[in-house]
Image 1: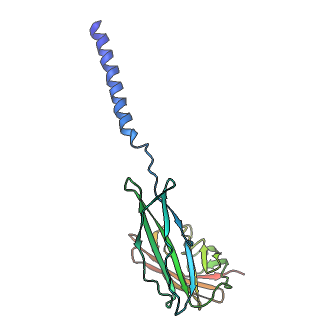
Image 2: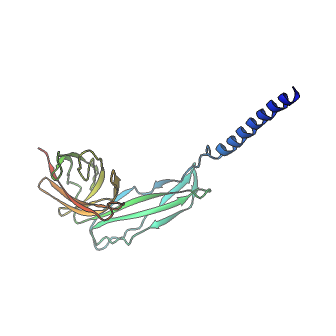
Image 3: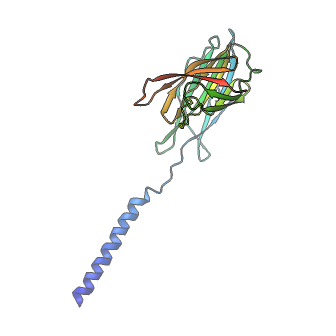
Length: 219
């Protein structure tokens, strides 16, 4: 009888020890690490008309973790030339006290002309894949930033994105990510109800694949 009692005691003790180990293993898993959040001073998108005298000075960002400011750094800052139309992307970086990081981006556009009155919004239809895919294009900034539902137009696979109107019938498709992975920025154009650009894939197995895409505005 005594051995039977001891046996059950040992079994119960083993179960308790096992559960304690499991609790210890899951203790760290339940820990929440708060990543830095960014406040983009001056906005996430800024635009300038091409000029020979202006100089861009980045206003920077504020980075906080749970409301407390932390140091931030430039992950990448291009040489922004206001005499040269195009899109420049500034990348910022910050860490919390545990070494976990987050990033943010500011888009700086330099346009060929004043494009504030341009409006490329509407419903477009892809022209290279069947069945034809629709993409609603919406202007989200008076200085030429647009959001579109689809950039590739391949049936059944969503790839939303954004582009910038540079004026002079030119645009830039901004980098993004969709069903087939990330895609790079690329130059495009627009004219008489037509939008055109190339989707340049960055992720394997499509790395380097470039697909020209044309959209026609619906009546």
